[in-house]
Image (tube, one colour):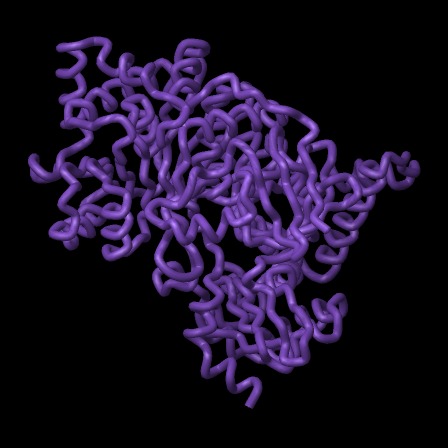
Length: 607
């Protein structure tokens, strides 16, 4: 029997569109800081008035190039202030942003730009332009490329400054040209077109109208997670819906965001900016968790033991508080000591001011979530897909339950179908896949606006959703037992700090096996501490590394059903990469691709 849970909060968005949200933000807080971005050795700051001035000029430039309402404007770049300003300019000009990851190959760039009928493209640099030039004969509708970095040829490709000059000329001729277009934007107009990276097949274009972002802004505002005084650190790919949601929430609430898409600068930037919150995918938290544990172990057995005991005490204290109980005096005093001596150092490494993190895109291990909570930086998991504008559930800070992703977000209904699939109905659900009627029929089969997510889940007694796996990822062994791989994989990465990824394999096999990769940074630290090789290829063959992985798998197996236990594994001599097609740009493993690349090895397990 189906189970339906409706959000306790109703929702009536104050703004019908992202464009309307922008106009209100510009008018209400023009002098507050809006963005910080790297500038030489420091950071430059833009107020909302600065943003309005520059994006109005850029929007006028787009109109001068002939952009019409709802026409698609592509952005192919890494996350940067330029991306955000271009995104806002497109909204003011009434266009629709089509996002393209900087790592996307030329053939897929051509497919995305062609399928979306992009007229104008913002490109980060010559490298992104070269992909377009390679496929230009197959892109007859693309009229202009605007380079964030570079001058272009002055005809087909132009510089960002040239676009600004076109905009200044247009505003000189008609000072209200952008205002008129922006105020004409309606809630049903297309705002964003995001192509899902997908784990199989060609990407599908998810059409998100302006009303979706009005809904998302209102939902996040009513959840009382952020305030106007918060400072966000943003590194996530703006090509991903998670990045767009964080921008929408900023415009709705008005806080300041520091932007740098270079993930290698994450730790020093956190120390410099001292943000109060940050969004990330689970892999980032896994790496930080592994790094902190590695540093503790590097101090010797006594320090490693003291650290582990301190963390355990802090976690116990937080569990007692969460249960509404009064901790003993001994526990209270022990936590105060651990928090000051241990956890304060952990917080300091991440800037010292973090109130919370937001995690999405993939499952987060409950062990890792509990550690960060004990350190005073709870990770609030949310659940959603590109097709639901990234929002379906939201964890509330006062109702954190590890392993769950919270209750339905305001104004949202969630149904658990008879087969366990999660269905969502809300103002954030897409209007459909572009040019894919058969795919639309597949996900809207339930009718009445219900979107089928493809995920399997269940509610607890407090209406908090727990994701158990992907419907298509559930394996069935040859013995008829079902195995949920992603849950096993996330548990393993929490147990094994040197691991990069694990891929569980079991479909139609008589037992479960696994492919394990090593994290290059963790291997370098492990090798230096143990007088061992510091490269992944050598470490993968090292007997002590193999023993380390085996010990983690043995620990993992202790908590699994007998048919789920991993009986054979191998450590690959390389990690999975985006370039090899084994990871999506949001760092999710493409299971089928990995299996295809390693099928001979997997077959050998069962020979």
